[in-house]
Length: 127
Image: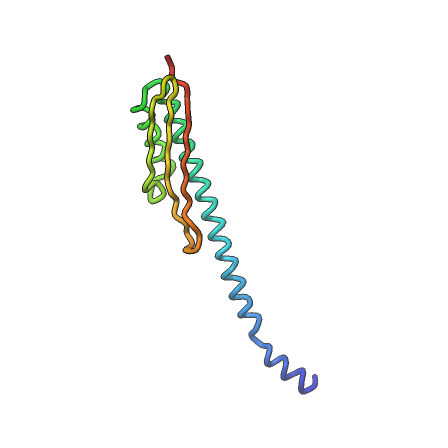
């Protein structure tokens, strides 16, 4: 090697480590965002399941049974901080039981917004 090539090789040493650190940080951030989306989808599915089972129970037992069953399902599937701030409500509207719920799931990253979820399920009540 000549003198210029040797000087350039010595000067370039360590540059790939900075690129690796930035790429690793970006990959970790992307992983956290994707994991947060998966958890939010799980929470949405748990809320939907609770409302469906509550509305189904409410067709026979009324609005009190609807809220009890929905609350039990939420406790089983979505305990802890994810169920903080969750509201469940069951009302009878003629021959229909309407179960509704809303919650806001917190974002895990500071620059992305929280995830508000509102769902409503209807079931025809038994005569």
